[in-house]
Image 1 (cartoon, rainbow, N blue to C red):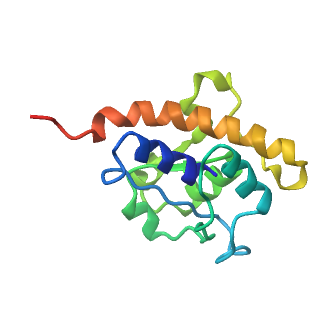
Image 2: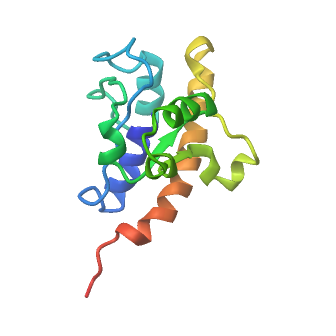
Length: 147
């Protein structure tokens, strides 16, 4: 969800050529699979297209390819931190909800997999709010100068 939402913000702002986002898991159990149907349905209801998304596993090279690595919960952040090779790698890690003042101290995006469809919409609400806040922070740095 988060990759698709963030990419949507970049596209709507006309910055898709300047901002890339990719999603990866810390485990390999879903590599190559589509997103859960309930995720795709929640995204579709909000105007996002997640049909082409396929799961992949985080690779150490991702530290080199990315300026920022956003984890959705503290367990993933801990795993990524343990994989970090340098302090530069560690410094790239952040929790998505840490960018959103409206999250009011909540740091973990819950995994809706074992919940009902309503939870997918609630998680999407959280991701949209935090992604919007993150995008507002990043946008001035990536917007090309007009001069």
